[in-house]
Structure formats: C-alpha cells, structure tokens
Length: 74
Ligand SMILES: [Zn+2]
Image 1 (cartoon, rainbow, N blue to C red):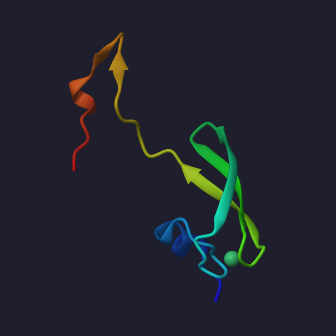
Image 2: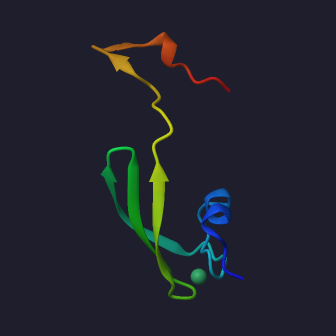
C-alpha cells in the first residue's frame, strides 16, 4: 500500500510506493518557508516531489560570533 504523505514524512528516505531506500533526489527549490525537490525511485520507477517546511534555524553566527541563544534544546 502506498504511504500517505504524513506516513512518508515520518519514514523519511524510503520510496512511498515500494519502501526501497534506492531513491534519488534532484536539487531542492526553496520559496519562502517551503521547499520542493523531485525524487525518483530506482526500484519501482515511481517519481514524486518531496515537500519541506522550514522549522527554524540553527548555528546562528552574528558577525563572526556564535550566538548562545541559538544552542539547540535537546
Ligand atoms: Zn519504489
């Protein structure tokens, strides 16, 4: 059964159709807080578009000085 987009977002880098890890992404285009990248599965020849949402930033450096407020909360 084909993964839903939500299931795919949890599973990550496996084909949503055949679950193969043999997938190849092309370059990602960013527009504001969303990004898209074409992906193809080498196992079952399916193609789809990965959709990315901006979730924040990390490793901020202000004028050459790392910013303490930016340390990731684990
Ligand atoms: Zn596949």
